[in-house]
Length: 435
Image (cartoon, rainbow, N blue to C red):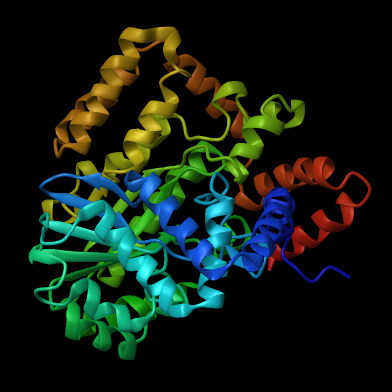
């Protein structure tokens, strides 16, 4: 009998080599002398300070605190979190060691968390206008103990000049009034809470993104945050493998409208990008030439796994032309949009002049010029890619429901991962997405 969701099984399978490696490294770390383990953790932090202070400008800075990882991504020694997410696969040894340190000595773990900030930012920090401080899930006390609130955010502690706004990320299920009020004593009134919503389609979010978050949890979290007097940012994705361009566009636009109806203050948009242990990367490496999926337009050779540049444009377009009170709330991710632009650069290099024009327009959009994308809409139809994009849309017209394309792609995934038992797993998945 199958008890887990199909997508959870997929992610466990994709992450199984990492899970095995993590257990080996964790067991080794538990055998270290405690002082040696602590030194190893601190040395890792010293080695790559840019990993912790990864975005900096007078307007926005982002600092990652050393932490034990996302509790949704990692349960014990098993990795199987959100299907589009991979923050850990390139540094499993370091993650295993800091988890072992926390399990062996909580005080040393707390000191390592503080050291990760001080090593990359120093003391007496002059804050940017917005200072993002994150641990992936800031309100998870297991990762970021509450008694560190004052050490990081207390007046006169690490910041010589506090930012206009502090910003942190959390999962909606972690938001409670009690936690926010405890934090508010140290962090103050000017706070932005960012949550990874990904999509307003709950079925898609949980049965394909493997997010484990309901719409009710999101609705409740937004209300609690607003009641405390803070601002809310909702993060949305544009694109996910297995969806048609039409469904990518419509689900994104419906998601924006839903978040606006909840009173979210800002919606940050990120085109999905390739990361090693993710569903989109699996599509790109294992399914990009699949004959069945190619016939339906669900894979496109080297372009597979990320949304087409025209799809991103059309998803955003209605909000660029909307009234200012709406258009001002929909913004590109300052972190993920440049990564997307960099990754698609090689894919569209066959028309360098057009690509340069299009990417320059996206860059101007990121810098606040919405008109750049409005002008791009007309230009896009004149490029060499317009005909091929229309052919792609024509192939996808055979699919009318999201559940159809997900079933098709799940079948092809299952054949690769479980050649002897894929039918049973995919039948179970079909029941999941038709409830």
